[in-house]
Image 1 (cartoon, rainbow, N blue to C red):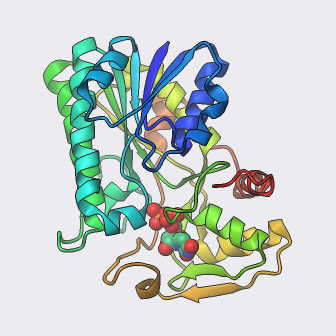
Image 2: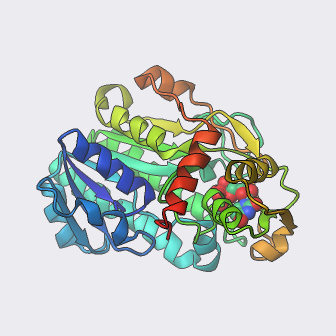
Length: 324
Ligand code: UDP
């Protein structure tokens, strides 16, 4: 299969690229390196089945050329990380909505199998545990810029599903829950690489709020397995939305304690009020647990790696000095 990965120089994209090349597929990457990093893909550049272009999705000529020789497009390019979203809402909305619009136009031209990455953020302020794909969605008010991320990704989902219904384009939407593993940067707020780095430096672990908020952390290797399985089953999965995430729920306090234990660190836990950590008015999700029954039934996938395995992999990567 020839796969175009938008945002392929990002954390998930680089892991997906490695897996596709390893099994003999061809990969082309389009990434403007805004939050992606060329170092993530440098190792692939000598590979005969690998190509990349550093550019925006708004460069229609480049996107067209890459899509014209792709069987499938995995659209990962998006504004990511709460810091970017809260500080640069215009860029967030434009990157997400206009980018997905451009990708779908190119995919329609060449009838590419298309996976669109969305996010558990679209579940918004919902308090249901776990979140299922057909749950109603409750977002916060538009005066809080945090919600522009969820709203823009939701619009991406609508665009993708509309392309399936109206033009029979084989589009599948995936909602990533917290995805972690080696190579993720902590620069945009992601908690696991931040905690691991703090622990390795024996600095205080900065837990935001009371730390009793919880998340389910999925190893990126599990996430990549899910993407490969979905790519291969367009019949069962086109026109559908799938959660991808782990079912193992931990509080952020528990995460901090586990990171300290696995690194044998002298770090202490420091609780930082949300008002200091984020812009005023920021609203954190209390719990975020995926219902993964649907993807389990469709392609037989479930997350396998434990939190300890995830932390150990991230520690190994950071200790090698490879973290950015
Ligand atoms: N968090 C934290 N300390 C940090 C970074 C994040 O306590 O240095 C918290 C954050 O407030 C949230 C959880 O960890 O409750 C997960 O944050 P992340 O940004 O990784 O993902 P998301 O908020 O999108 O679930």
